[in-house]
Length: 473
Image (tube, rainbow, N blue to C red):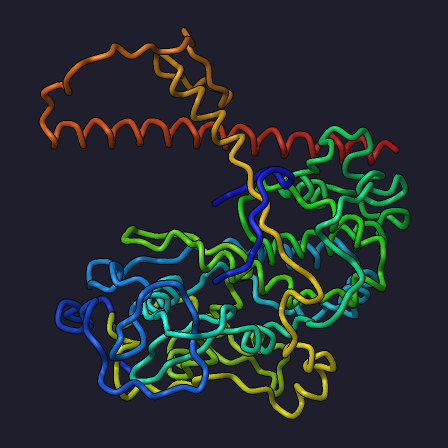
């Protein structure tokens, strides 16, 4: 899923009260879980359903999306979130009072109050994902979940209310090729010598440059622009730190009016929906949901108030917009019963509705009714070039690569490994074969991890050198 290049393969997004336990009193999970093929009693009907090409039960009109993760042993899985909340702290440290106020007055200003604590309820999110269902004849831009005996919707409406991000028209097309301005912040500060070429600079490089950049009157306005670009990439794309920042963001940030009116809600919603529909949800210890996954996390709290009362605390503000600023996650982890969302008496909201104040403040709200791709379309761009090259190098190595003290990798001998042709399969015990496969996977993962560490270190060093050059200027 992780991508590093932005200009190869194109994939268009067009998608066809409750129990709590503690460590001293664990729940008997085996007796609390609904089986994968079981049907809750009389789930409430809904006027809106979700469409999918999967076959559904002809009698009930729905089926579990991920039945393989609904067994007790797989319900303790956790979701890993990659939203870069550490950016908020860096903005407060780096921008200064004047630029910080200008950021606060921008379309993302409310997010300066976003909590930066790393603790997030990954297991609670996974339990909700395990409740996802496929419903017959429903909308393509909705996800549905069975909570108790009711169906709960996550759609662009819920996303807009939780995030407060704008929907509406724009004349800026992020899918066009843009020649970056020579006097823009990217060419002036980040990559003046065009070292990264058309692919653009990696997120981690830009982030390290931002952290180490000097604060002075000449650079503070440029730092504000760079902060905006980092925010969009770090919150809405929220993926591998080595992913390159799209060139269109550097172009759009130079057009302040268009930046402020860009439909960030419609665009980032498409990213999240693509990521959720393509997440590697399967029986395992943990998995990632990329994109602005925190929006989905806070949607769960809005849709299931009982969960919010257990794992969060309310902020001191009476009226908070957007809604994802309403609650803070508890520092102490809370263990939920594994059948938390299966309980028949659990209270939940099938759909989220805007308040009177939200209808007043969100002047763009009528545009949420529009086709989410009518004004701006997210096209997923993915390349496996780097991953394929690393894999090919590993396969061609006739001896294991050795990790040096500086983190580099060398091999005593690298040459294509020829395989002898055989007319019949070797007589190998299946358990022995599985052991060999697992050991090979482990060794390959170690090598990949070493390469990633080295690349991140190089990025940080390059950013540090550029910031030193800027100080001398």
